[in-house]
Amino acid sequence: GVAIAPLSSCIRRSIRYSRSSLHCGRLGAAKDTVRQFYSAINHRQLEIAGDLIASDCVYEDLVFSKPFVGRKAIIELFETFTSSVGPEVSFVIDEISDGNLSVGVTWHLDWRGNIFPFSKGCSFYRCEDVSGDYKIVYGRDIVEPAFKINSFALVKNDISEVWYTNQRDLAESNRGCYVVV
Image (cartoon, rainbow, N blue to C red; front, top):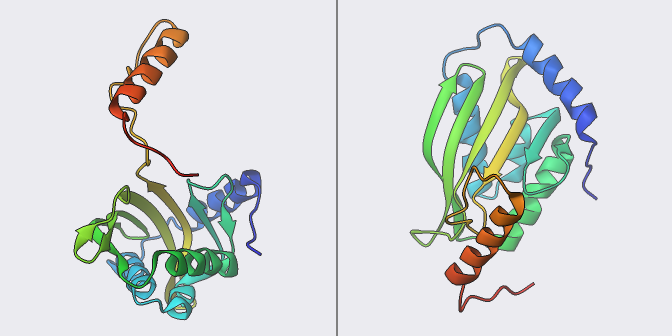
């Protein structure tokens, strides 16, 4: 099974990492580690991907209600993911930024040279020097939602009006679409 921890225990770990990561790392090392991580996932080399993850890494994929904690749980997540999407789906890094020990990535999934539907995302990673190797100690993924809100108003006085308007707009924009659950 996959180890999932309560968020409160992960917050303490995240704070500890941010305090211990105040020193500057080797320029580009964290970015290189994250690129290698995506490459290993794309080539289904999960053992190599695991070597890039700290043993007590916290990985928040916001699709899930709780973070994955520890290398084993994170690799199991990616084993499940890669086996479910098949060999022709891969991550494409659109942009990557390097903040020494912190890395931001925008990406999408590619299938046979095409952008896979609803697969754009952005990720944040924090790395640390662990015995001379840079390891991912924290990750957070935010993935494009499958349903778009369309003309949802950000500011309304009456929440019931917002709900009604949103439901009407969704019904109009999704006419003829069916969701299989």
